[in-house]
Structure formats: C-alpha cells, structure tokens
Length: 492
Image (cartoon, rainbow, N blue to C red; front, top):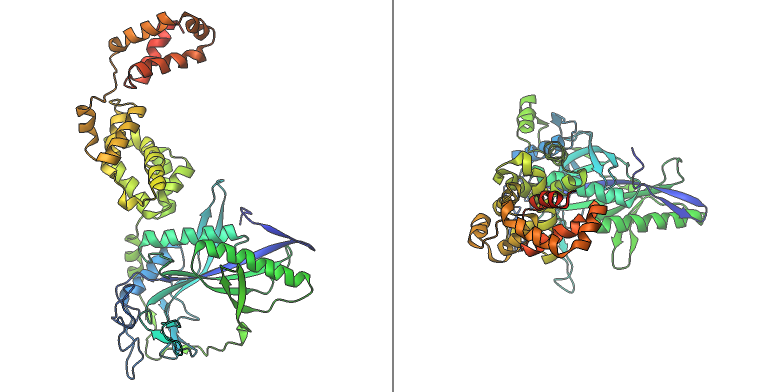
C-alpha cells in the first residue's frame, strides 16, 4: 500500500498513526424487501410499507428476494471479489423495540461475497488499494421516533426488512482523507452498478467507522467503533476527533476501552454509546426457516457478462481513446451521470477521434463550470449533450472559432436552439477566406511601423497583430489563417 495521504498525528510523546477500517451499510436497490414483498419506497407514512413478515406476526416465514441476491453478487463482481456459491443466513439475536422478531437475519460465518478490493486514486496521480474483507446480506431494522409524544416512543417499521449489503473493509486506511476517498469511490461503483443509490441523506448508505491509534510500526491498538455516520464529511471529522481523543488518553497513561461510540457534529466530539463490545453475545445460529443459498457458476457468469463498464475501465478508455489527462478522465467518470453525459456527447460527434479531447474540455470547463456557478445538477442542464456535440463539431470542422463558440454556448444556454442553425442565422461563421482578411492585415501593418520592427526583431510579439486582426474581424477570422498571413507579410 502506498503512503499517499497517510498522515501521522503529532502528540506530546511523538508521532501516532491512525488505523481505520469501515463497515458500510448500503441499501440494496430493489422494489421489495429482502424477505417480503413490501415496498422499499422512501418517505411513506409510518408503518405503511409493512408486511406481516416485517412485523414478525406468528407463523410468518421469510422468502428470499432473488433480485437482492443478484444485486449482492453484482456488487461483489464490481469489487473484484470472491463470490461464494454457497452461503447461509444466520439469526443475530438481540432485543430492541425496532426489531419485531427479536433477532436480525444476517450472514455470519458464510457470507455471499468474500475478499475483494477497491483502488482509490488521488489528485497527485498516486493510489492505494484497500482490501474488502467480505460483503454480506442482512435485513435492516425499523426506526424509533422519540419526538412524536411526550411520554412514549413510536416505532416505524417501514425500513424493517429492507435489504442491506454490509461491506466490510480491511483496516488499510491511515488517514481521514483516505477513508473519505474510499467511501466516495465505493459509492461511485455502487451507483454505476445500480445496486445502491448511495443517497446518504436518506440513509441509503451509512458507515460504522473503526478507529485505533498506534506508534508507527507498532502492534494494532484497541479500536473504537463510531456507529451510523451518514455523510462523507462527517466520516472525516469523526476519524480526526476520535484519533485525537484516543491519543490524549494514551499519553495520559490511560487505556482505550473497546466500545461503540456516536459522533456529534454539533459538538465535534464522539461519545460513548455502549462499552465492552466483546461482551455482546448475539448467539448466532443458522436461520431454520431459510435454506443455504446456492447458485451455479453459470448464474455468476451471466451476471458478470451483464455488468456495465465500471469507473476504472471507463477512465482507462477515455485516456487511451481520446488522450485525456488522468485528472480530466477522473472528473468525467466521478459520477455516473457525468460519464453518461460525456458518452452522449461523444455519440453526437461527427469525428470522435478528432474531437473527443475537445469535447471533454467543453464538458468539464464550459458546461460543468457553468452548472457549478449556477448551482445546477447535470440532469437539469439547459444545454443538452446533442447541443454540446454540435458546438464541438462546428469548432472541429473550422466553421467557428473557440471564441465564437463561447458566445454560441451563451446563446444556447439562455435561449436554446440548434447551434448549427444559430450560426447560420446570426452570421457567426469564422472567415477562412484569406482575401477577405488580407486588407485588414495590410491596414494594421501600415498603421503600425514601429510594431512591425519590434515583431521582426522578436517574432513572439506577432501576437499583438493577431489580436488586432481578430478584434477588427469581430472574432470571426480564422486564427490559423491570420497567423499564416501575418508570418508571410512580416517576413517571419
């Protein structure tokens, strides 16, 4: 593993190293729950998406949702992980008001997906590989509502039984930046696969963050788990706060208790939730109502063949086919919507090989720049992929200059319309006819003999003449034609 973004924390007794592992709970994209046909739609009235199975009514039996299984396998394949063709469901026993059964159906010793990896790249071109320990399927619990009544807590079981993938990383991260980059990359992969929407505000993706500290090179320290962190920013903050808390205790001669903690972003602190994690006895045993989950090699091969192109492969293709810089390619593949938009622009180009790189520049700099400035998402862009492709085509074929293209983009953004028709109707074509601009060049040379002498002595100063010609032509003169003409006229 590279030391990219690894960070030592300075303490009173020397440097300390953070060791971080993450357990990501990702809600499976599925219309129905893991063991019932109840809806998974977000935002329904309390207890409106609850079947008799979810409410744990007597005699109700779970039935596995095959779609959720295929989503977990597809995720495992996307993480380049071992797919276990035989896995089992277990009961994890604990009693809590939002868990009607008195146990959670999960996977313990035999998960559906084994070891995999996520490669995380950074802006400086360096990267780290973070190991995946396992991915297992389990059902979510319900939700307690404490603010509905002054004397009672209410229970909403809409989430009860919703399918979750728990994705457990190895303790391979050494800084909050690495952890944030890992969650960002993992969420991108899940969105490309369509197996989780990654919406952290709705609770579709939550993280339990395991943090310990040690002197560099020493044995692993005692870890604390920060439960249910629901934003990438908070993950970074929680890690920094918890690491410093642990260092403070150790440097004062104390010891770290293994415990679960909660992060409070308002107070910028973690606080104890429950201690002695190892004292939890969940009394796991195989769920007697569910047979082992078994599937064939052909089933896995079929799912693998249908996987979409994932971010790393797409990035490599953009670099290889269009000569994009790694940074530009990373910007385009960072979100599936951005990549899909760029692919649609490419589809609309007359000559992909010639103009692919130019199209990328336009999508990143002009379109994304403007969307960011206006606070708009790409889905609501006033300029379509087809319109961007038409503008790039017009530049590539020499009909308009880059400067005219920016004016054209502004018209399309505010008024809409077909770029090619707008160029015709508004006389925006650039002038490539040398005879039409020769007189302009002659007039400027004649009026500025001192500048001519300077340019002949120092050819780099020819740029002043280019600027004057472009200005007098309203930006419509072809810059290459102007350059060639000036070189000839000035004897350069």
